Image (cartoon, rainbow, N blue to C red; front, side, top):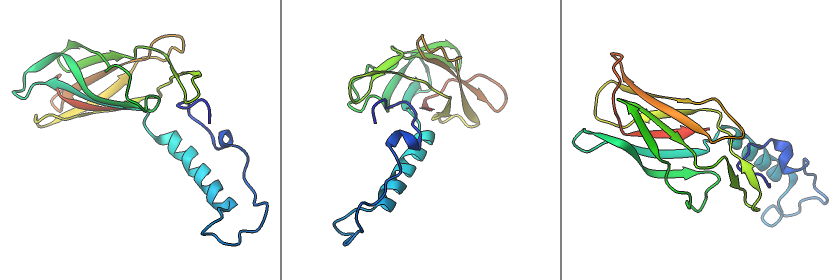
Length: 170
């Protein structure tokens, strides 16, 4: 399946399989039903699974803002060895954080450069402040430029608030 992490359709995994011979012993032979179901499920999960997962510290243990915020953990679908440098953040105001991917293309499993395309994202505040909610608004997609996004946290009272957070990117 060259081209991962580009989103795939079921047809990207090849034609619907058919048994050449009858399955005599399902303990040793895998039939068309199993493979076709697996390809269908893989394509479906690929459509809804996040491409990125980040844990970001925006506050110290004492509740003081961290400037700039620090990515403490990240995982990306195109970086299974976790070799990519940690995403850098900018704090442009209380509760407002921006990031940019260092590149727009990353190698797939065969070494071909694939353009990364995010469809959107969601951030979850991970702080002790009650009533803090998170939202993530990615910038407009530019297939020739760096992918970037903005995360903003606002309390239920409408006040910007710093937070530690988890970010999922699709």
